[in-house]
Length: 110
Image 1 (cartoon, rainbow, N blue to C red):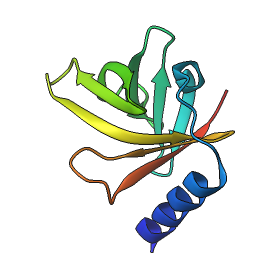
Image 2 (spheres, rainbow, N blue to C red; image 1 turned 180 degrees about the horizontal axis):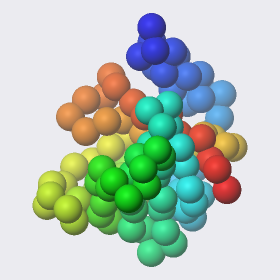
Image 3 (cartoon, rainbow, N blue to C red; image 1 turned 30 degrees about the vertical axis):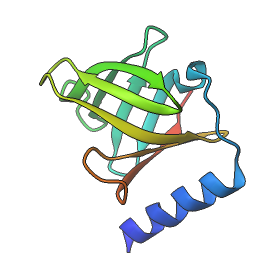
Image 4 (tube, rainbow, N blue to C red; image 1 turned 90 degrees about the horizontal axis):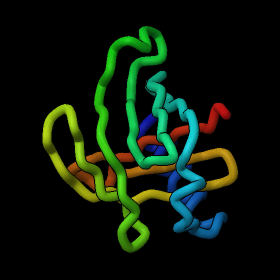
């Protein structure tokens, strides 16, 4: 049920809001439904960590916007992949690696 809600939110957000390719709108602090914090800095580095224990880093790396997609280079594992994304007024929806059917839904905290 939760996955269906996230997918519906992604479709609604994509349909209702125009896509923004300006990477500066990515900067900031975000939280998702799994209680994970995502910090994206102006130098396009990111850290995703648990909200309950911020010292626990889930992933970190560098982002680059290429053709309205996010190119991710994980500095903690060396993995690279490309993700689809959409930014709304206070939301950030991004596909999970390896699938276009599962997404993270983040809300802006700042």
